[in-house]
Length: 457
Image (cartoon, rainbow, N blue to C red; front, side, top):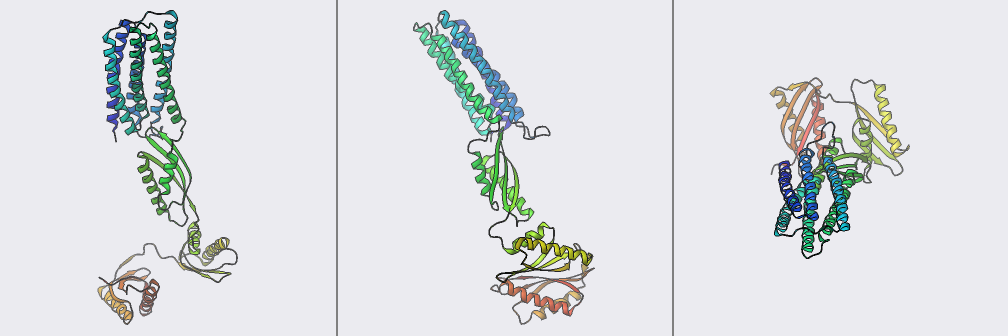
């Protein structure tokens, strides 16, 4: 993408070109008495002023947002373009008044020579080059100020051609040709101003760019996890597209996954628009494919409760729900029971009074229990016991056994292998049987954590 240095360089080159050509046309116009050529010189002078303004504005418009300009400084380009438009209308009005005066008074035609034609041809070539360079820079940077400048120079070509026609008519004896050409230049300037004003005002009043809403909506909807886009607004500030959206996401998603959706949405709109700034508000909604367990987990999470082993039985006309609820182990039973009752009521409000809910209260495991590695002899003893309990079953190759002594008791971790075709339920049943046997044989073992894996290839 064209850099800030490239934008200011193109604008600076245009300043010198505008000044040189304006001076040349003005001098020749005065010398031969051509209103059309003087008008075109004045037009170029306005272009010079516009280019200086553009050069100054693009040096500021790309500055990042700050404490006073939360959306950056891009709107300065639109304000400068509106100011240049006002100058164009003043110039067009002055030229039309002078043209009418000359046509009414029958002013003698200008002196015709090769000099004005040479100056105008050079002017056309220079303006074509400048318009092309500015248009390319404006397209790559999405700069409204550079686009307005490019439009100026493109219109200068038409103005110069009108002056040439007027001088030719004057040379052929049509005394009114020069004044008529000046009037034509004024009309072209007015038309240019109207076109610029329309585009600039639309930007200043935050009109969404054509097709931008559909493009942004499609980009956000393509992000996995986005169910739908509820609302989307788009505005342009300089070259940056600001997008404000409210999107629906599954209510069963945890916060970190919703944050991933937001980041992916920002990346999607950046790919679609280039320089884009997305404000993404996520609205959690229920999906049609939510299970009873999903809905219960949402209820618990919204209440800040830790639950597991959610079991649901459907008896046709009645739902039976069993839940393990973890609470602080030091909490009094009465307080814990109140929490369990509240959870039960919330579930009944969701599924109906007929749902049968049983909540098993158990102490929450300490977050960071202090512990140390057990002696190697103790690890070998427990590893041997685990291997013995697994013998004869489909669980085998007990390995990576670790034993830690903690304030709450011994914690045992081990890995084992199972037949790849075994179901998760069957693996869990057999590993659970090994764990129970270990705790019966070693009462000091507080917890056993196993990791089942398929055999090595």
